Length: 231
Image (cartoon, rainbow, N blue to C red; front, side):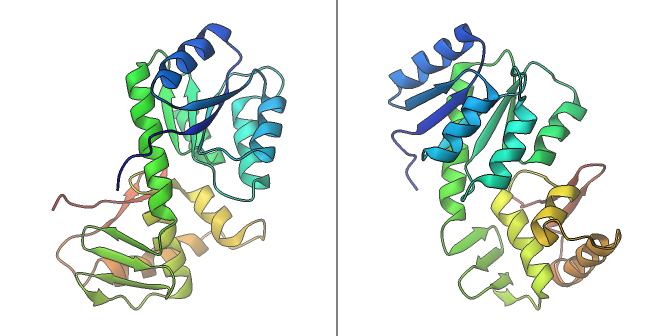
C-alpha cells in the first residue's frame, strides 16, 4: 500500500515554538494542519472535524493530554489515530498514555523526520485496520466472516477469543493493555477479575499450542501483543 501523500492533522500543543516547528516541517511535506493550544479546544475540534491523525501533547493547561485522549476515545464516532508527545520518559507515564488509548508515544526532544515517519505509519496501520482482511505472517483474519486461520488452518476460536485476537491484530505491533482489552470487551459492565485471564488462556490453546511457536505474547505488567516472526 502506498503511503498517503497528505495527512489532515490536528495538533494540540500549548508551546507555540514547538507547534510552529512541527507545522513548518510537516506542511512542507504536504500535510495539512489545524491547531489547538489547550485541551478543551483540541477535544472540541477532534469531535467536530475529520482528521487522519491527532498529535497530542501530554502537558496541557486545564485538561491535560490524558484527559483529552480518554474523552476522544469515549466520544468519537470512529477511531482516530493518536500520537502523544511528552517530555516525560518514564515507563509509568507511557503506560498511562496507552491505558487511555493513545496509539503511539514520542518523547521530547524528537526529530521532525521521526515524527513524520511515526505519523505515516499510524495512518497506514489505520487504513489496514479498515480492510476486510488482516494478514500478519501466518495469521489471517477475515472480518466479514469473523474467521481466523493460521498457516491456512482454521482456528476454532470462541466469540471472545476472536474479539481478543482481532483487537491485538488491529493494534499490532503495539501492546494492548489489560485495561484496554477489558474496556473493549465488556465496556463499562462489571466482570470477574479473572475473566480476561481465562479467555487469554483459551485463546493460547487454540492459537499457539498446536503450532511450532507462539504468536501471543504477554508483556509483563503491561498487557498483550502479537509476536510475528519475519518471513
